[in-house]
Length: 268
Image (cartoon, rainbow, N blue to C red; front, side, top):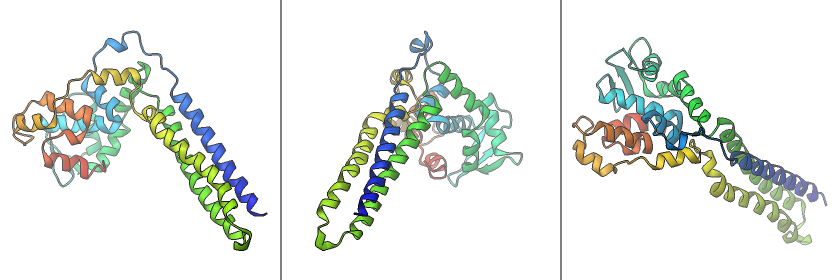
């Protein structure tokens, strides 16, 4: 009957982790109190970028904006070079500062520095205060709880295997395996429900923020490619291209070399 101890461990891990995930999901689902005028306001491109993809998307948008204005060079090899060292706002100055005094750096460390730059954090704080962005604590709690349930699911399988090794084949391993199926089903179903129900609360935008994002008219990528002739320097509509980038990320960029500079080397 030593296998019962493994069963208790499996049940304990499953119940504790699933309970924590449920509590985290409920807390994240609590309605946020947006500012009275929040639902009727428009979003700037930087705000749309943060609500769509978080700090990394804001960094994408800033770099591409400066690249389109020929104040930065972005190479498909993953290097960024400063052309104009005078940033027009705090985010652009943060980019130049992240690149460093030499004026050239790999894109990856620049991206890491931008994600934690003071202007980006301040932008996120303003959106959270306005009720448009999900607080970082809620996002973190759900993500951590999901990882714990995954670990519990693995632990159930490991303890089940150990328990079956303790049971002689002649005694019948079927009933023992059946007992471990229950905590396995609990953790697996909890992960499935979390994917369907809790996943929206791991997004950057709150329900009000998502509604504002839904009002943004973004041209399809094919239209952008036709306007620019498939070339980022082809004279296309910068406003439409930057809007598509802010909402949909680097996949919306029609220029493959620019996508390579931002996607391949940024680890998206």
